[in-house]
Amino acid sequence: MRHLLAIADLERSDIERITDRAEGFAEVGRRDIKKVPTLRGRTIINFLYEPSTRTSSSFELAAKRLSADVVTVKATGSSIDKGESLKDTIATLSAYGPEAIVIRSPHAGAAELVARWTEAAVINAGDGKHEHPSQALLDVYTLRRRLGSLEGKRIWIVGDVLHSRVARSNVQAFAAMGAEVTVCGPPTLIPRGFEEALGCRVSYDLDGLGEADVVYALRMQRERMRESFVPSIREYAARYQIDSRRLGSRQLLMHPGPVSRGVELSPEVIDGPSSLIAEQVESGLVVRMAILYELLAGGRTRPAGARAADPEQLPGPTPIKEPA
Ligand code: CP
Image (cartoon, rainbow, N blue to C red; front, side, top):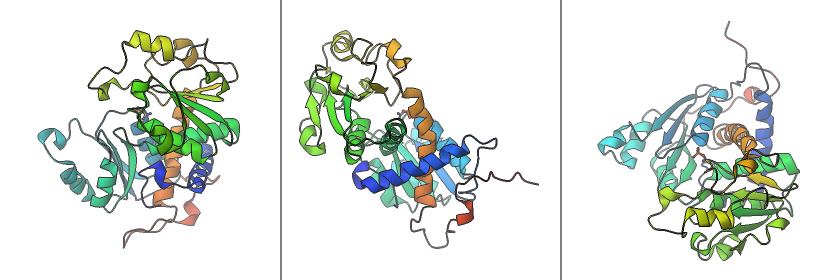
């Protein structure tokens, strides 16, 4: 793999390889010294054009645990505030010779454009309403750990599907892994043609929710709305909020975060025993280590002059030696 731009570009075997490798990296997190030298001497730039807590911090920590040199640039406070274009900003950052650029942008297709403008491997950390592939991979990893396999599992994705890049990536990733996916929400928040385009079912109410093995709730993305899509938040919550009346004890609950407490989820289910929300965040770190490994050390074609990965330095049981 040269870039990670969209789940649509991946085969099931790619998803399995990355999530299997993440399992190996989980062991690194249990060591006293939580670091391996795999990407020593490599430079990774995290370029966040839009707010982020989980994706930003986990990509940075993932790069550090792999011993890469990492710098995080946020749009606010950068020269973008002074009117520098995305293309010029990427040219500037590429001058440092990074091996990877992680980009989050409010614009669909931004990561693909960046991939045309730089020699670095590009990781899409969320581009507008389009895709958030690393989120989908960490969610598959979380579910594989819990359920063993997603084959035949019923997953309901509930909420604001229209504005959700997570929904687009996750429907494809879950389906590729053999799950039966249903998206659910008010008709105004389900894109037309979603069912045919992505091969999932659509429901406009929660009547059939009891069949779900996994309930994946989505936030109402009010920052992307320029008009009213529901009569009121109170009415939306009355019809679509996942609470302890609606969530059965055998069902697992997921959410990509950040959560709007009391809107898409009631407080008791967020903190309840069925919730995998904290586990998803934990998975984000090891899955992003596995993504960086896949692109920078897993056999991708490197630009001339770049060093190949040292097989001795792949993740394993030996902790990194402290400097003498
Ligand atoms: N799930 C997710 O992308 O969270 P952040 O916006 O905090 O990165």
